[in-house]
Length: 248
Ligand code: BTN
Image 1 (cartoon, rainbow, N blue to C red):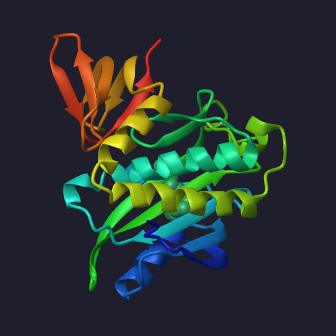
Image 2 (cartoon, rainbow, N blue to C red; image 1 turned 180 degrees about the vertical axis):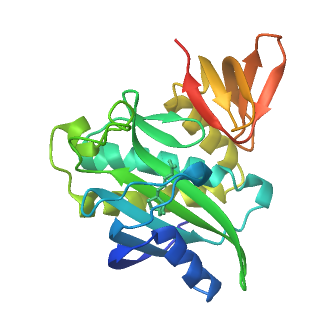
């Protein structure tokens, strides 16, 4: 069963595809409406950060979802997105990716894609704006990103084709989102995500939520997508928001 029929609106420039799609969602837009922009002048990342979005350098995309599943399962929507981006980059660009909790796509140790899912209230009910930013063509990044970011061009050694990646992404999003609505879908999504993430189990990490920092070894994912951390005291800390850093 395919639930999602994406319809993509294209823009040359927007402040943020997430912000524009939230506006359309609050006017009653249907599930599956999507926005693609060539550049964003005020692209937004997780934890109130900016998302650098130069013209033609990335895939800046947002998709409106009105999920028919209990809200406590909505964190898995970012898992759906990470799995779909992983499929699309493998299929359309030959790039293998790792996933760093909660939803960064990495090539090697460097970030190639970020995901920002925002839940909003609309006249048609609570909805999700799923934003995806893929670095496509950059061969050099600003100094502060040079060690932590990469692009499809750098990872594959070829100039990527944005339309081919978008088409593969839409197909993969439809597949994984449909699975999320099936009876055993949630377990399958967590299992697939775990098998594709070198951070899911046995990795010594620090996790920061802005106020507190925990160190421990990752020991799996809860049903709702939270990260389990085995801390030095032997206590299992369940983390629902934060940034993960590998400890060497
Ligand atoms: C992150 O911090 O890793 C998430 C980055 C998400 C960026 C995408 S680009 C398309 C969409 N519009 C935005 O303003 N942000 C998301």
